[in-house]
Figure 1 (cartoon, one colour):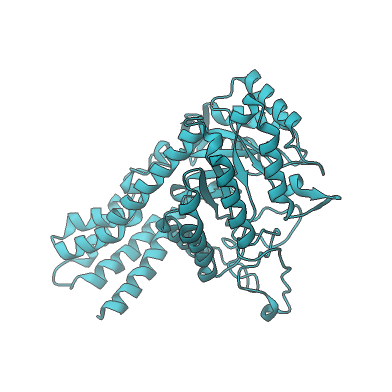
Figure 2 (cartoon, helix red, strand yellow):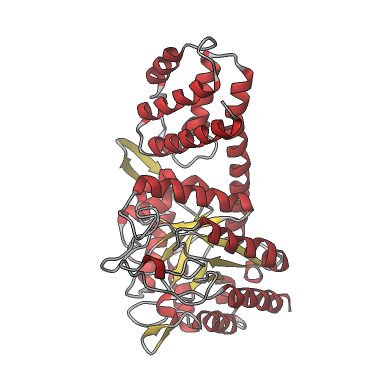
Length: 436
């Protein structure tokens, strides 16, 4: 079999394995593992039935729910499990070496990078090095099914801008794969990769996970919103930051989920704009919980890096100096660990005459910086901003009757965004101001 054909078959099986494993369909995943073995080993070298039999007998080796989010548990990695099978049933060093290339080496490199990024973000949320002078900027909401366009956007950030601002600003790519809706509408690429075709979650998982891995391999940490907590096992190990949305922050399951993950979690204030409820969600996320998870009794350890994301609410902003003082008072009252706030400069914080104006995002960030300049308590409280940004400025509606009319060159199909020129100028100006 030619190398190109072999690689194509391997990638196909790899996608199938990851999807089936994420759905806990382990016996089915073993079948595709077996196909991989068939591709790389002649029948004379290995007994095919033995691999399947051995894998099925051992497939329930035990997934400890306490280690659900551990990056060191190679047994939870599908291809890592294939290596375990191969080491048991064959001495074919070439096969084992190739399998390790696709799993062990790649996973360790990615996980080492992710662990480093998580520690960096957590360290800065604790306030080391006066993190006010090194703000987190959350960019981009994923909203177009074209990896080429996304890679162009990521390339701008990696190559054109980040090197110029990294001494003062840490960029976390907000690659949201699901879209919460007030009523109805397109729910994101993980559910419906192509908005003009029927929903296809299996294909959506493959597409979005590939996109996430691509961004991580470019050298940028990524973030996502935990809209459905039961989807976490398919993506969680790739994330360096997680958001709990305004519609979920009062939900007990989301609060417990936030207390279990091993990276920083931003808890948004609810759509009502209540700061007290927002802080309550942080207290819950920082606390330990004992719950039933997937049939097991599990104790979460509490997340000391849970923090507040202010996004406004009830048709009004909540980023003013008075609002920040209120946040500080509530956090002091509850003894919140690593007190921190990220200001979402979009949503209700960007309203003009009752309507969102994406161009106001930069103004909001500048106002926050001015408000906290001479207030030590709130100055140390604010750790960064969330921006809605993409290649082109604005947004567009999806006309299901006119697929050809959709601008697929980097224009949002959900919330209106700043264009890349505006974003870059803002980042460069912000970094320069912080240096002063």
